[in-house]
Amino acid sequence: MTINKIYIRFIDGVNVLIPVEAKLLTKNHYEILPNNEFDYMDNTILFEFGIGDLVKCKFININNSPEATFIATELIKSGSQQNDIKRMLYDILQNNPKPKHIFENYDKSVIEYLFNDNLMKYPDLINWIEKYRSSIQLRYK
Picture 1 (spheres, rainbow, N blue to C red):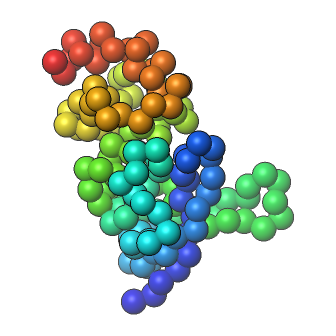
Picture 2 (cartoon, rainbow, N blue to C red; picture 1 turned 90 degrees about the vertical axis):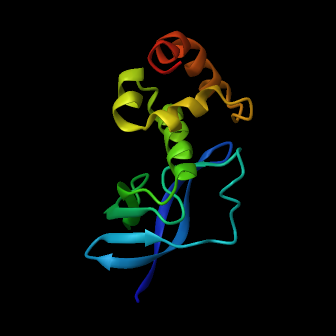
């Protein structure tokens, strides 16, 4: 088993790239391994990919750096519903998508989490939910 460091995108108040260990499965495909440094269940931390996710990675130059960073860029298979929820919230904060994008990319049980009382309270996330609440509720309530 080959273990590598890859980077995943996190939001913990600000956008950051976090190095995590991942198991090489095939060329450029990795499984993200558990990491004791981060509490993945913490509602204030959002991420694009989490523990157990199978991801595709590629080298990307960040901020005009001469050295490329090996970043998880595409989900192959989800590791858990919790990862899907955090990925959806991350997606909303990063991309401000229309509800159609959310409907096409996330399961109903994940989308319903948007109405959970324990939802993390990033202002831009709350604004997005309020803006699209009626169209989401029409489809799923």
